[in-house]
Image (tube, rainbow over all chains, first blue to last red; front, side):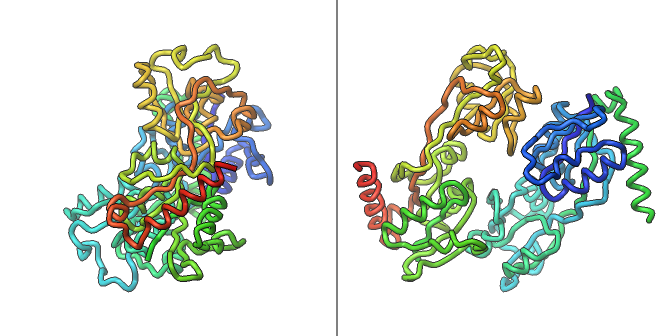
Length: 216
Length: 216
């Protein structure tokens, strides 16, 4: 049976709405008190797995799900071996470099050599500073990255910014953008090539839905 | 000022109670609606950072906090360069290998060669299977590791078990224990050596409190 990996959190509602538009109803994941991580569409045509954002590419890479929905930021960070098919448009955010507003730094190249940068996006941050030829130490954090500059542990952070509220509340400002991110439809490469469970039909329908939304 | 890194989540309450017993009051972190990540003790003698469990060793390793409280599981997984000082006794759990109860495996050595093991504890799992001379593929997941065997992506998982309820609810059983874990008091090695901010006094008091509790 076709299986779709759906991310918990911010992208969940839009993901379920999109799949409903192509006839797959996984809205049971949105019910209050839902504890299921795996459900079947009422029409019995497809299954969905509810997993962490960063686990979506894992389930798709291993072929446990043929399709998945995940932020471009996660795809960049994990460098997963999956096929990127459609930019779904929702979940816009950006991966940015930010510093304390009270600091003297207004561009990444003004950061001190061998300075420190805290981030959950270790690979993206490393790649970015290497491309600038700026040697910095990346400090891997799992949460509340803004504490890096606040406590003085790091001069800068590389973190996802959506509204910018968290930065503002913590007295931080963006000084550069690594890339923009939105949700993407991804597929297991071999399943896509073999059109397993007729997944091409779903991809085509999703592509049409997305371009209709974009045209409005 | 002496700074203590305190973990969010399951160890928070006991950590704050322990620090209160040595005269440091960070109970403001427990107030409903608290959004602060950094507070100073009312007596103005020490500061606390409220961070993710896995970030505690980072703040301590970089010397941003001289002391920290964190699970032994995290210390093992991250192999952080910190001084382990006191076994605090609370937060007991174990890192275990589990499989589907309906599977034929009743010992790790019965797992298929080149089988798959899903885990958040990638380093611990790899080390363990290497010590058994059993070649397996470790699949790194960030959450809901029990989905690995349920979906058929992996034969086994390596995950933290406290009560065992999550395993039972998902039809999984433990077949081996990698190690037992409890909360530990850790210190920045250089700060400990230099007795920065008289941290030896606090460590001594904490040690006494813990041995009094253990003697009861």
